[in-house]
Length: 358
Image (cartoon, rainbow, N blue to C red; front, side, top):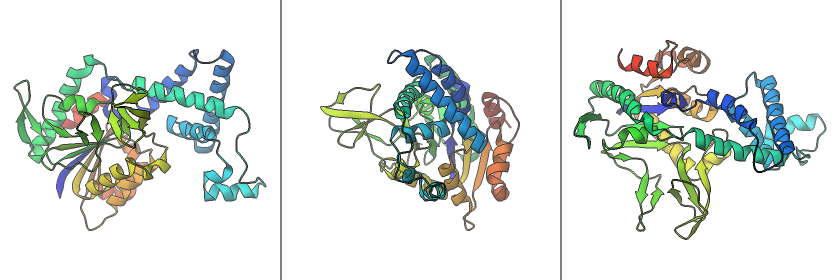
């Protein structure tokens, strides 16, 4: 069994000026107040009204509303959904109030405004998840401390970076993340090779290969894709700096970033393979260090819980996040013998330093 697996949420990137999911709600609402060049002010106001209507409705029903929940509703509206598309339980509930399940749910211009909001949301996320070059040294400082601390305990090997300095390197280890940013790639650049599941084809194009294995290097798996993932019309996923209409004589269909609420897409390429790999890695690793993640995504939470339930295997889940105590109480109390928390409330940057120096 492997020693340790790292799982990084948005909080792990927060020290470098990138927003958490909570930050994104506030920032996106500010974005909505800015006038758009693609439509009239009336359209902007209608889209903003739809957004706030959804937010109020979701908050009244669940007690909170984050971007994931609002985005989920917007996506359903934009796809001209019927009541029957909402699932069996919802279909039955609808039948009790005498509505035909085959009817379209939304009959106004809400689908137009929903599509507009989705375009804004995607552009907004892409812009907010870009790392500033000035943050490189801070990334190196914080993650060097973390990797050195873990490396001393788990006996990572030493490698020499391009700067001539020695670094501890966790070969055979895996890092999983739901982040779209490139913080981790930035840290390892110039230190050592990592297996990020990309291969170079005969035309020198970087193509995603979810089956790529290399037992001697660090593995990095981005469960929700990344800013530079784009899909071609032949089904391949390639790496590009920005969106373009064609690449290598193939049509570029669009970005490959999985938003947490797109659960039905988890059965499609490449997400199915990435999550299958994740489940197997959890089973094969003793300690899971989770940094800056609050487990709001039900699917990912259940993958961890499924692995924790295996009585024949001894696993340990370590939570490093400002609200670790709350996450433990609400998500993992049943498995308290297998969960350890770093509970002190502080900024994520301070928390990482506190963890690695304890």
